[in-house]
Length: 337
Image 1 (tube, helix red, strand yellow):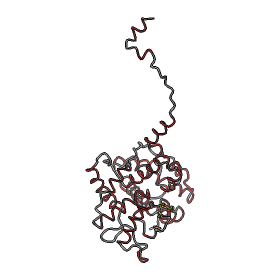
Image 2 (cartoon, one colour; image 1 turned 45 degrees about the vertical axis):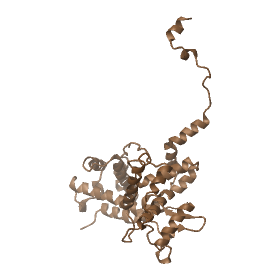
Image 3 (cartoon, one colour; image 1 turned 60 degrees about the vertical axis):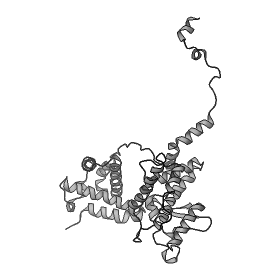
Image 4 (tube, helix red, strand yellow; image 1 turned 180 degrees about the vertical axis):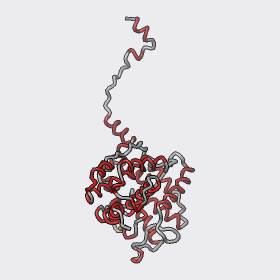
């Protein structure tokens, strides 16, 4: 059976272009692959085009819009998920137009499909008191509790995404002064994040307990389960929610009902901002490409805005109360003229 042009370009896009030319992470490539699994499934089940007969000319703007509508009507996907799937298709056809420009008009029609406007979600983060309460919950008399404290405190201290945290190995940590950790972020971009002395103390105890400073374990996963396997994202989320539940019992005001691992990243950014750290430095710690991305924390911080307004406030109101305010009987005051 002769392979189709769609299968040829899709294989090259996923296996070569994304990893070698774009430097996309394995997680990004997996997410893109999942989009095409859904799209192929849609074309076969709904459009009745078998996968082995799916050519680029079969894919039109109309069929892509129908696929996006199907995601929301049949699979109950949100607008955000729909936009992520569409962004993947945009990326693929942007690549194809240079490889096979014969059907350029239709490719550009597909790329003209607009993303849906999504509702701005309120940023969820903990106060410094909330973080302190959360980190007091692990039982330090057990090995698992000491691991969980090291994990959650490092997740907060580095402002790292959860996947990047569980990808860490002991070799990424510098235990000599100045203390730092090397974190690989989106697009395989590496950044050096400074560590506080208290955090290093927790890490040293954890590393020594598990002999992770020995040369043969330098590339072993930093955080692992009882089977010595690297933790998963759901596993770390489970750990966080377990301690959040315990902390919420002690003080429900400090621990919001909706909490995720990303909330600790938001918390770190907000606390740095409230401490007066420049947005440029916060950008570098979080690994943002542009400071414009980091500015969302400045927009979200109502406390910082209030302080800025109070500091800039100039008294302009009159000291004496106007007569029309002091007179309870306005009608009587008017008649007195």
